[in-house]
Image (cartoon, rainbow, N blue to C red):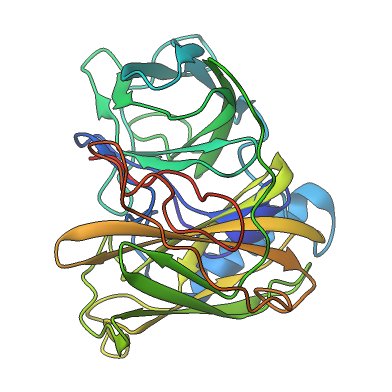
Length: 345
């Protein structure tokens, strides 16, 4: 689930956001705190070049193909067994990945400590979850989820087939999830350079530009002091997911380094390289871990404009009245509007 240049591809589809949900492991991770892991972050350059080559083959020179826009690709299909659930009620999501013969895929190549990463986002990009489902022996994945609002959601399964399966490389498949209940769509939060989540302040620097790899830098502080002891999460000090507003194109982004490489510090800054596939509005979700808890900071950016735009709006405090197992209900706001719920555990 290598994510260095995937942001370039995924941005083209939804609203740039980086991320990957994984896991044969147990549980769900609040979106506000879990950096998605895609395989080993060997180096920031190598996976980026690999993604670039993959993207150029799909949309022409310099145009990256976003992931998650198709339910089937490379001979594999995302088969969601629970396409409809009710709002504000815990439900087990169940799904399988099927091969071209209709059989359930049971073998996966583990990346960043997980066999599969599951990302969930509302169509208006105000709710986001990074989930870690469990895999049963028969090839069925499941994870509990409780969504606060009704509406249309998109699920992204990020994985690499393993075993004797023909290797199509890393895949991100997407499918829709309908959540019943009273529905009132929200506007995408306004662009902002700063957001807060559970008392942490995260500041975004850098630009997201169409067709060009750019560095995004996110600095974490708490109570006015820089956080210099971030903890590794899924193989890095931060995980970034980018989704493009409008079609929810999914991008994977690789951090600029990894713990133990001799040059990457555990904060306060985490850097990523990302390429937007087009102009437009993107939603970025940064998962970071500190003092044993994963949180998610969310931002809205416009590709082609300075990160955060011209706004110096006062960040909105997230956290507080959240559901049990959620990270504060709004998961870090990026200006106006709520930023989705955090990771579930």
